[in-house]
Figure (spheres, rainbow, N blue to C red):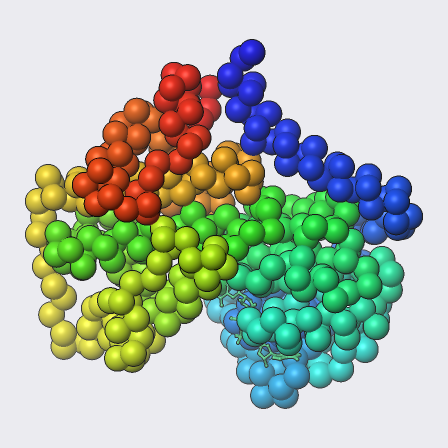
Length: 428
Ligand code: NAD
């Protein structure tokens, strides 16, 4: 048997087979109507629930692409803030020459702000972006179902909750899916599309076509904690924190190594300060708990202490770095040897995570690589990177770490071991 074919069958075929089985099961046994088979056009109205950071961004994208948008929030203040924010953003785009004056008015006029869920009645798709609270999201979906038509697709922008669990309380879970945008939504090209257990293929394909029309890059992810990006990216932060805790290098040196040697746009500590240490800590905790306390994802006390001290990063002017204008930035130890040790250790941990995501059918190889380059701006897809540096090399480094520490955290992915044994790569 050709092993490259066998690998692609593993990564793509099984996902398709699983989905086809599920879909035909639901189509034939439950006799459900196909949902929204017709492609979306600009004449379709789009609904967004939650006018916060993500909701207003998604509303901007839909309106810029010609749709009439209804943006609903429970808070009048949130609606006013998002209205002012969108107005400012669109004007800024005009100043930069990216929009014409008349386009600013047209786009802005396409967005309608309301506190009334009944405004969603004639929407073809509603995207939910309320706060990350499980019972609130379930309540929102039940309310939406009582208002929208049978053919309306309902999407959640959740980062950490299970799509299936949200859909579990709905009467038509086959039209519910995850559409996970990245912040800032209008600028970040990636959207992870996440079918729940009961989602129909037609709901997935209609959503992907719509997002394609909005010039987004979509990847298909299994409904598991962290989907692709928030799962595969964990070692970028976690391993950097371990290196710091072991005093192998300081914050500035680790960041320097990942930027200068690795080619990442930001080092892990700069990035954590940018995201917010509280936000990053919560994501790490939620992935760790959702994976039944898998040791690879264990949060760090160093990060916990930063949160407890209120050193949340840029937003509090203090995180791993001091952002006060008079502060002197720390100097990295620019040793190539040390830098390579740091970079290689973090890189092989990232590759191991990406390999496990293929092994457990979370997504295809191509989608995992696309997700990390488009969702978090990695300089290269991790699986492509693995092929370039050699899988034997990756396996040797992981085995050395595992032997040294004796921790489950460093165990090489069975897929890497299998490919090395067969003399294969991720891509042919
Ligand atoms: P946010 O706090 O900025 O906005 C949430 C909005 O929901 C608020 O305006 C709030 O008033 C509104 N809201 C609360 N209850 C409501 C209700 N019952 N009905 C209508 N509106 C209600 O949050 P956010 O950062 O935009 O995150 C929204 C969702 O997107 C979350 O699920 C989050 O996990 C996910 N997400 C966030 C990011 C990010 O970086 N912020 C990235 C990707 C995904």
